[in-house]
Length: 83
Image 1 (spheres, one colour):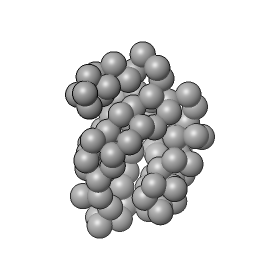
Image 2 (cartoon, helix red, strand yellow):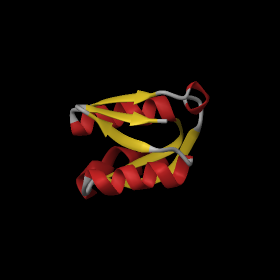
Image 3 (cartoon, rainbow, N blue to C red):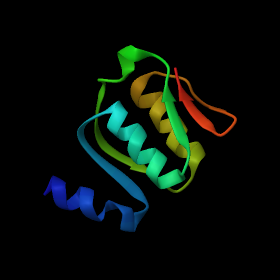
Image 4 (spheres, one colour):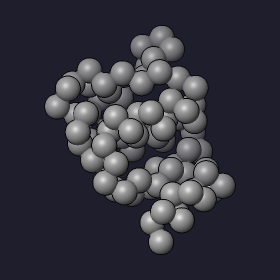
């Protein structure tokens, strides 16, 4: 059921992850928002995410990442920085 949810999630403006490394989450965000994501803290790269994140707006996405990973998510010009 999880692969089906992941494959169709874009139709509901959300992303679905199942034990996905933050590096892959970042790549998915880059593809959907057309913005570069920089993970400045190397310890975060292997953190994994299981759940859904809304694509409704970027502010909600950043808030979700901050809550889930306990990081600071911010814009630095055209780049989204996680540290």
